[in-house]
Amino acid sequence: MNDDTGMDRFNMPTDRYPLDDFEGFTPNEMHGLLYTPYDDERSPMYLNPELDDERVESVRICRHMKKYLGMLRERQPLKLTAKGNLPRKFCRELCEADILEGDRFAFKDRLIMREEASYYIHFMNVFTQRIGFTCMDKGSISLTDNAEEYLDNRSPSEWFRYLFKAHTEKFNWAYSDYHSEADIIQGGFGFSIFLVQKYGDEPRKVKFYSDKFLKAFPSVLSEFSDRESISGKKLFRSCYETRMFERLLERFGLIEYPGDEGIFSRDRPMVKKDLIDHVFKWKVL
Image (tube, rainbow, N blue to C red):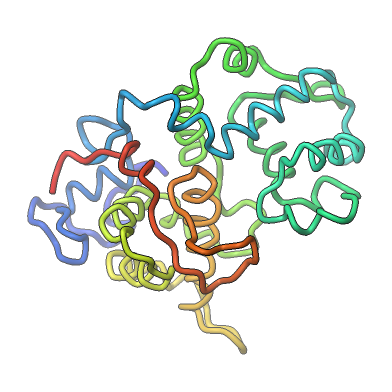
């Protein structure tokens, strides 16, 4: 998200007074958090410059990314399908290597027939291209020099930092999730992280956080129209949970679902993990 349209895009005043709807942030601080979240001069949030390698090396997406790129390196240049997808045999090898996410149980007892049958495998292919880890040439896919550098020379903390920033800045969360664009959900990821850090010690359902997000950014509901069987507010909540909680916070090991045994439910309470407080620091409040 860029700052070309300014604060008026979300009807936010620019001043220095803390607002209850912003959990005590001023509009100026929220502006920095939305548009320049990693700018030390403008954003109240910053990433811990001394991340502990041992605490981040087991994060699922980091492990999966290294394994995916390593398997691809062994087979490069890997011939793609006519549609530009990963070949079926390689997708099955990824499943066997447990490079799966919410679809782990879907493919436990059956073979994957195509890349797009698994959102996570498809995400890996698209994401690695988008962030400059892989490139296509003449119908085949290979690793870039940047990916080779990370595989051979970068520490776990450098992996985590790069992947997290790339996931929030370079990858469009609305890609292939069938919800409205609603880019404020992605742009406001820092505010959502703050909410989880502040309230995540106790198990809470996504409704608690989505209500607070709506209080800060009520205009987001304009992007979710009521349907015959579901309200716009419920559609927003589903979108918010998918993008923020499942595909960011859980993917990067920042939250967990107590008592969860892998059975998906939209009504699961979650708590923060200690890692979130280790990674994200704040200059205010």
